Structure formats: C-alpha cells, structure tokens
Length: 183
Image (tube, rainbow, N blue to C red; front, side, top):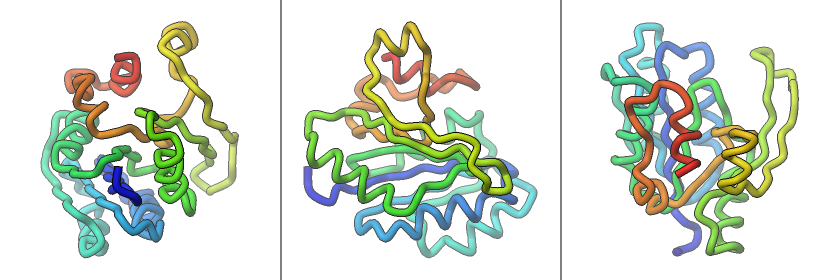
C-alpha cells in the first residue's frame, strides 16, 4: 500500500440540510493529502443541494438523484470511489480533527488489517457529548453473539475487502452494515 493511502469517504444524504454542512466541513478540513470525497444525495428538497454546491470544488463527485435508500446510495458511491480505504459517514455525523491521518497510520502500521473499528463520541444536536466509545477488536463470534457493539461512522475497511464480501445487500433498509460485517 502506498503511503499515504487514498481514503474514499461517501456521505449519503436526504433532507439533512441542518447537519450537512458540519459533516462536509469535518471531512474536507481534515488536511489529509490523499482524500476522495463523494456525496450521494437522494434528491433533497430542503437546501442540501445548495450546501453541496458551496463545497463542490472540494468534492470528487456529487449527485442529487432519487435512490433506493441509504445502502444503495453508499454502494453506488463506493463503486465510483478509487481509494484503497473506504468509509461512509452519514449526513448527520462528523469526523474529529486528525481522524484520517490516524486511520492511515493504523493501516500502515498493521498492513494485515482489513477492517478498522475506531472510537467515536456520540453528541446531542447541540454538540454536547452524550457518550464516548472506544474501538475494540471484533470477531465473527463477538458480532454474532453480542451484535454490532460499535458505530459504523468510525469504521474503515479496505476496498478489496468490501467488494470481496459482496458489499452491502442493497435490498436492506436497516442493518445492511451489520450484515456486511458478518460476512
């Protein structure tokens, strides 16, 4: 893997204008030198497109079209992505400063890693922290027995791993990430 690896981030969005700008800024202001950022908007009518256009010069790709739900939007974004490392953050999530540099360093230091679970802070809409979660090593058994005891927005995986396991089941509206992680 070339260092720093290209990290591709996809943000699905649908009528999330009140959160979207914070999400976009948290990604484009990472100061990470090899970032690909894709926004897949589902045809929002609440001002999302104007926000996306404001940052279009910092995006690799964006579109605003009806889709078949979140799993479909993210999957189509990943099909457009060219990065070695993939993740998606929803339009009401945000990355902490320096997150991508840290992710790249973990993949560099542990080249056998296929999937990285990071920590995150869950916050109220006001920005006040509710709880902190610290990443851990998940196994198939822990996923099967305890469920998905981590947060998708802090997960990163290798592109080839995502497509090798078949990506998301786009017919699922919920738990499509958990289904993929089990595979």
